[in-house]
Amino acid sequence: MSNSLAVAILQLDLVWEDPEANRQKIESMITGITEVDVIILPEMFTSGFTMNASAVAETMDGITITWLKQLASEKQVAITGSLVISENGNYYNRLVFVEPNGNLTHYDKRHTFTLAGEHKVYTAGTDQVIINYKDWKICTLICYDLRFPVWARNTSDYDLLLYVANWPKVRVSAWDALLQARAIENMSYCIGVNRVGLDGNNYEYTGHSAAYDVLGYRIDTIPHEKEAVEVITLQKEHITKYREKLGFLKDRDNFNLEV
Image 1 (cartoon, rainbow, N blue to C red):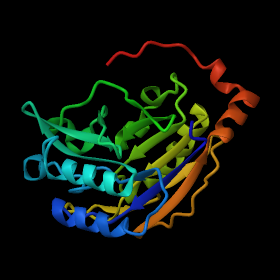
Image 2 (cartoon, rainbow, N blue to C red):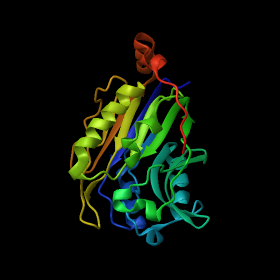
Image 3 (cartoon, rainbow, N blue to C red):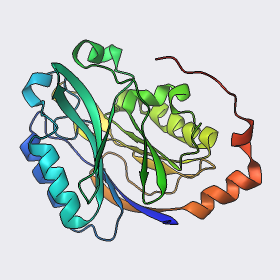
Image 4 (cartoon, rainbow, N blue to C red):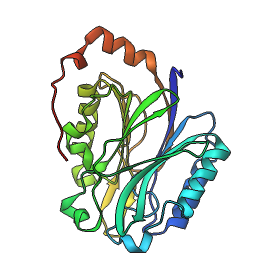
């Protein structure tokens, strides 16, 4: 069992609908990263949050997945983030979690962002995904999922709740508040990784990537509005200590979730 988990957060300015440029940028940003367990990239890290799915979509054996597997193997680190995937005639906003040994787990965004018409382009997922990596249980979610606490409810005693996002500046106060709330209510580490810069639709993003402990205290120093890389180490004993001491999860409500 690994009592600690070192995660590297990449807050970057994505190049609009240019997967190759984004792969090159990511590769340069992670060059100096060593001795970490997981590298976290934003939502749609190859393209930005585009509804032009046909222009950037890839397959699960395409260039970016192959590249991620090679990077994960070379650096002996897991890498995660979402990209546009075409499969069986549908497009998905799909988070992939690629391990050093080549194992790949994926999660399809459950709550497609209707305000931007995402539901008209991308097929929504139906399954919550809990990844067990180095004996850490990680719940992976995407952007708009953050507004729906029932979908994230910690009924499986996960250790880390992870959101990757393209969350715009105009609503970033909600992003800040809800990330902290998800940590507190689920007694879990909660990390949100967001982009910066302007996208192809001229929407502005100011980052606000952050990591919270199980009590809702922020444990990172990631700056706003600019590209950044920060490594944060999470501790299992922190989770165990406060779950045993406070016991809030023992009082959670039972419910059935319909999708």
